[in-house]
Image (cartoon, rainbow, N blue to C red):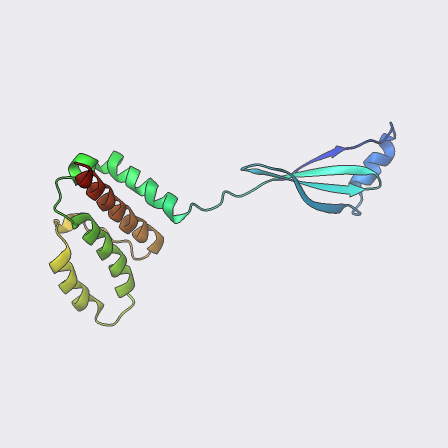
Length: 163
């Protein structure tokens, strides 16, 4: 919702200032005089008066990196998949599951998807099937899971190399 503020110098001529406020002759000055995370102020000018129109901006969607980071945090805090837990996995288990989430999303568009994916899945999926939770109706969510698992694998490999 916009909030409008009349400001400027009207030399005590409040009546004309109020008339100017109600007119449709305001020109928007496109310069963003105030721009913060959630507020944007347009300056409108008419007949020597200035009207500021303050508008709340919608929150921009999170970037892919932000979504992946938030998912990784969720995996650790809610699922208990901590660094210590991840370090117990053999090399590339986490990455292979992340890749399967991404591949599953791609392959759902193909003919013979089930037969093809089942062969790949049975060969590369290292965990109990109860942990397989694809979300093909929400591709961003599924790719976020894939990215978080790959990020966890990178972290695990970095810890292993630093020892």
